[in-house]
Image (tube, rainbow, N blue to C red; front, side, top):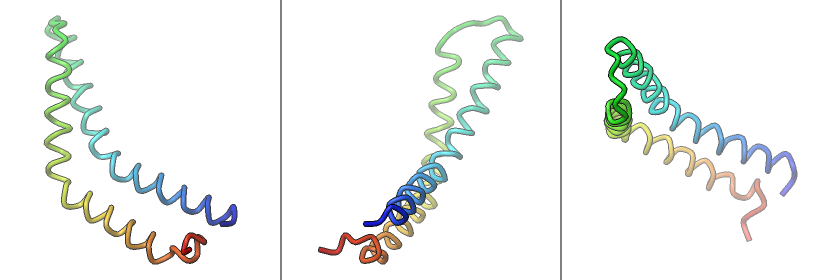
Length: 91
C-alpha cells in the first residue's frame, strides 16, 4: 500500500468520524452553554443541572440521527470494500 492510498484511507475515515460525531457534539455544546448561562443568571451551581441536560440532549440527538448515522457508515463501508484492491489489501 502506497503512502497516498494510506493517507487517503485515513483522511476518509477521520472525515466520516467527524461528520458523524459533530452534530451530537454541537448540540451538547449548545445545551451546555445554555445551562451554564442559566446557572450564572440564577446563581445555582448544582453539578447535576449542567450534566444531565447535556447527556439527555446528546442521547436524543443520537437516537434521532441514528438512520443517518447508519446510512453514512454503510456508505463508507461499501466504498471501503469496493476500493479494497486499490488499497492493496486483497490477499
